Image (tube, rainbow, N blue to C red; front, top):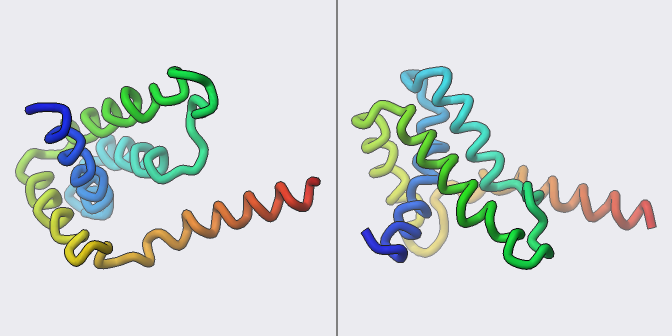
Amino acid sequence: MNLKDRAKQLKIDIPAVFIALRKKETPIIAKIFAGITVIYALSPIDLIPDFIPVLGYLDDIIILPCLIALTVRLIPPDMFEECRIRAEGLWEDGKPEKWYFALPIVAIWLLMIYLIIRAI
C-alpha cells in the first residue's frame, strides 16, 4: 500500500473508529483508545505545536496514525470491517451524513476564541 492509499484509508478509519466507539460490543480497552484517538484527531490542540519547524507535524504524521493503528488492532476485525463500511458512506455527496457531530468541535473553538479575546 503506497502512502496515498494509506492516507485515504486513514481518512476512512477515523470515522470507523468513532462508529466502533459507540458500539456496545466493542471491548472496553478498545473504547478507551478509540475515545483518545477521536478526541486527539478532532482536537484543535496538538501535542506538538505546528509552529515548531518539522517537529510540529510529527503528531499528524506519526502519533495520530499510530493511535489509529493501535485502536484498530484492539477492535475485533469483523466488527471493524463493518464500521469501516459504514464510515465509507458518511462522506457521500461531499459532506458527512451526520454533520452535526462537528458542532462540539466548533463550540470548543468559539469558546477558545472568546477566552483569548477576553484575556486581551
